[in-house]
Amino acid sequence: MSLLPLFLAVSAATLVSATDHIVGGHLGWNPNINYTLWSNNQTFFLNDLISFRYMKNMYNVFEVNQTGYDNCTLSGVAGNWSSGKDFILLNRTGTYYFICGNGFCLNGMKVSVRVRSLPVNSTSPETTGKTGKHASEAAMVIPSMMMAVLLAIWMGFGEI
Ligand SMILES: *[C@@H]1O[C@H](CO)[C@@H](O)[C@H](O)[C@H]1NC(C)=O
Ligand SMILES: *[C@@H]1O[C@H](CO)[C@@H](O)[C@H](O)[C@H]1NC(C)=O
Ligand SMILES: *[C@@H]1O[C@H](CO)[C@@H](O)[C@H](O)[C@H]1NC(C)=O
Ligand SMILES: *[C@@H]1O[C@H](CO)[C@@H](O)[C@H](O)[C@H]1NC(C)=O
Ligand SMILES: *[C@@H]1O[C@H](CO)[C@@H](O)[C@H](O)[C@H]1NC(C)=O
Ligand SMILES: *[C@@H]1O[C@H](CO)[C@@H](O)[C@H](O)[C@H]1NC(C)=O
Ligand SMILES: *[C@@H]1O[C@H](CO)[C@@H](O)[C@H](O)[C@H]1NC(C)=O
Image (cartoon, rainbow, N blue to C red; front, side, top):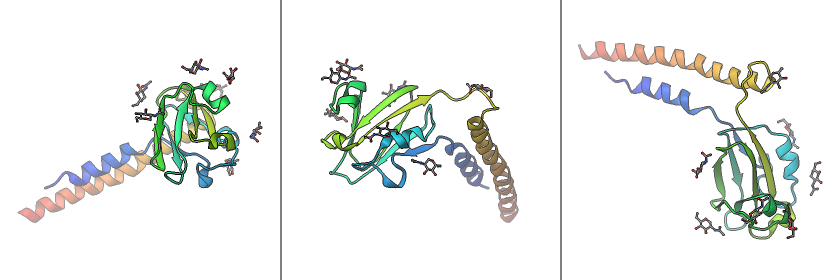
């Protein structure tokens, strides 16, 4: 008998938790978009992901400090990405600054995001959203586990 189905059900449940914030939504990472409007419309929590989608070799992503962000320079550069589909883990609280490093920052390709610690409340709408999501994941894993056990029993009988 195999525990693989059970293992898969549990892994699937534990993988889904952090939010991936796609910069610019369907507009992606491109010139002449006001990313302040996009950023203000999101809530970033610790260990969420931010992802940049753009034409590779055309644009890129640099993490800089506030001086770099304000002035479109590589001041305080802390990292750079250029795959065209870059996922960055927001693993500290505070403000992150990202710019396009090849001139397009001056065309608006800059974004700052403020990362908050995970809410401690269960009463705020944001927390209720998260709790609701986790609760529904838990609700899904129970039938999956029952299926796995039933399958294991069935396979066990098959071997007799
Ligand atoms: C982007 O929108 C913000 C918020 O409305 C505004 O303050 C800012 O001036 C805009 N930036 C540009 C470059 O238009
Ligand atoms: C803000 O978020 C809402 C809900 O996700 C969305 O409908 C709206 O288009 C967003 N606005 C901007 C400027 O991104
Ligand atoms: C932007 O650059 C100017 C001149 O290089 C500098 O005086 C200013 O401090 C910089 N902005 C910030 C926020 O540091
Ligand atoms: C950004 O980094 C540069 C170079 O290390 C430094 O001179 C500048 O003070 C930093 N700016 C901020 C706002 O920390
Ligand atoms: C970009 O990142 C690579 C490592 O990933 C580093 O070697 C390189 O110096 C960085 N470039 C700049 C301009 O910071
Ligand atoms: C966040 O992740 C980066 C890259 O893996 C690592 O260098 C950095 O130390 C981490 N920061 C914190 C606060 O864990
Ligand atoms: C906790 O909830 C109260 C009342 O809803 C709210 O005023 C407070 O800002 C919340 N604190 C956090 C850390 O979310």
